[in-house]
Length: 374
Image 1 (cartoon, rainbow, N blue to C red):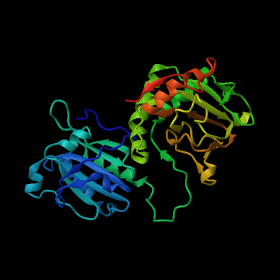
Image 2 (image 1 turned 180 degrees about the horizontal axis):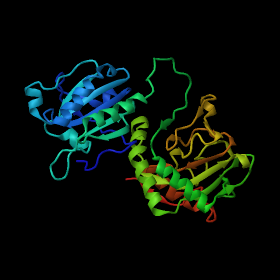
Image 3 (image 1 turned 120 degrees about the vertical axis):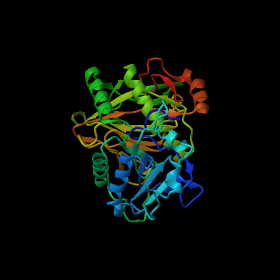
Image 4 (image 1 turned 90 degrees about the vertical axis):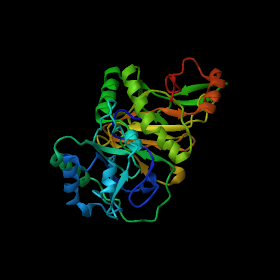
């Protein structure tokens, strides 16, 4: 049972539950649209009843193409007396009489009470809004409708072009954490960052401004490190498992980087695991801390065309370390990034085997630490 509600960016737990129309409704099969998941407890609760009535007035929003509504009741009388009923397309109710689904979503309190809450999920079934359902039904519905108003339309089907096999994940870090990391970098300052090459039987850091211009700062603040680890574990690991069938167990490197237009910040085409000291790396995470405050500074994967990739502030682009990629030049402002690598237990053994190739004086660009991811 989950004690606290889900947070922004968290992956919504998958489940199977009975509905009015299906004995086994598989929740993950409705991904690909926005979802409202309302844990209202019982329709006899006055606040819940009013919320459902107010949402009925906005019934046309729930079309199963862009948006669907799922109510969750734990009251068997809601089914027996048909106090709530599906209206397809768009509106359905889960009969969560054993409270198993509610437990997954933090709707059960430790004292046995019920925490009423409404979640809005994105098409990847990640949380983009958490709205506690308290005493004011009008305010709750107004807040929910305000969220729904801001959602971009799913859009019509289109023929996909050539695309790199990457994940773009919004809402990994909250704005407050992004700003705290930027403030930390500015307080510590950054040192010139090189790139790794195998020379003379050792993996060493090489500096060549035509290849790479970036300044880095190792994140040594323990609380900030823990905050970053927890969010990446909860919001990135599950998506890698889903998309690539790869179970991340370890996270390497707590590095803040800055590409500054005044220095011509960039990193030309490279791969992240071509030396003995970096052979173990499996996935790179480029987490954008201040998107929109600079120009240029996108990711490009030339093996898959000229497309430019970025993410909203606090969002990440996640990709295999073996993909050829570059960070295009920042032409105005400063681009701040958090740049860890992820790997698993077989890769950990490779890393341990190759430790003797690393030059002891190599900077944090290889790894400052290795933390278990689970």
